[in-house]
Image (cartoon, one colour):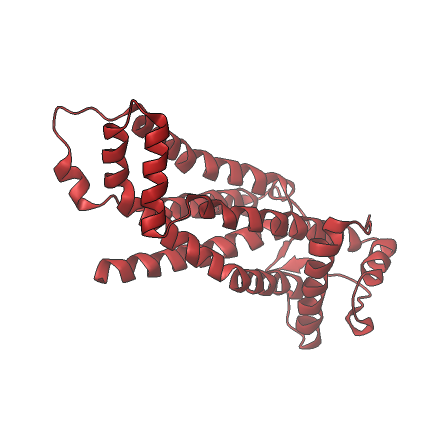
Length: 266
């Protein structure tokens, strides 16, 4: 179950150690629902680590939005010369200090972290009724004092080891709805507002380019498809993962709201 491969060594084992550490702390101070609070604490910890990357992503998205009118002008001017178009776009990015590829950095960093957390939670969930699983967890902990002897997966009256589909009550239906709703709101608030001057420069009889139509269609699909996907995943995966993802989304929403408010004032 806990193979000593590169991925586990770099992601699963460290996350598992941090999760166990928080779980031990909340158990030590006799906090009810220690497992749930440990997941929340781990989420906050990971979010703080990734904060600089999210901040950079938001600034890059804002700059790309501000550059869009200039990019549209270049696209129209050099639409018959792809090589010149590319060089002019790269020149514009360089002058603005923007790296378009940096927008993918957060997703690339967050993906292995999420997979590592999923693996860690799965191990924890299996450990609730298996002494062997607990022994395996203890075998990869960095310090002897972190070792656990049992696991209580209950949090606020809900067993975090179960999937919402296994609850057979209204709470089970509510969890994927909340997860999907938070994803919808997060995606909506993360989309930059087009610069005001863009509309004034457009001619009434000018039709949007095929690339603009494609981008709008993609944004619209992602706006609705992502919430449905995350709602579906949260319905079929342990509730502990939904707790992590929803707390993470709340932090992202608050960060985007603060960022947007600051730029409206400036």
